[in-house]
Image (cartoon, rainbow, N blue to C red; front, side, top):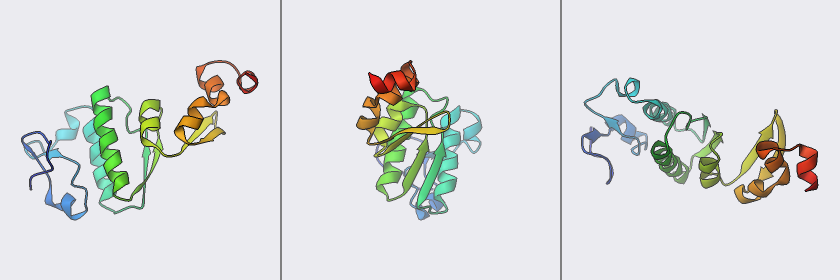
Length: 146
């Protein structure tokens, strides 16, 4: 175990094998070997991400990683995903938390009932009348004509 980067809470250590795989941004309290089972969803998400990163993927697919997290945990997850992306790993994010999606993603694809209704830059997708109609009320036809 070794010390992690600045800002990591006291008592958190980094497993040496994670450093070998350049996953040093994921912390694991050394005194809590069964930590994921005790503290809600974020430790499980971090454990699964760490496990996936150990294979040195070019693409990391994540399905609803923010499910069950509070706002603080989501911010922590976002910072982690930004770090992973900055390291050169592409992230495929399937997520319903639009604040997380719009703040993290370069490109967004929106599905409604399994059909693509919009694709593009986050700002463009947010303004798309079909997306607004599908997720904020109205029908596709009404949204497309307003």
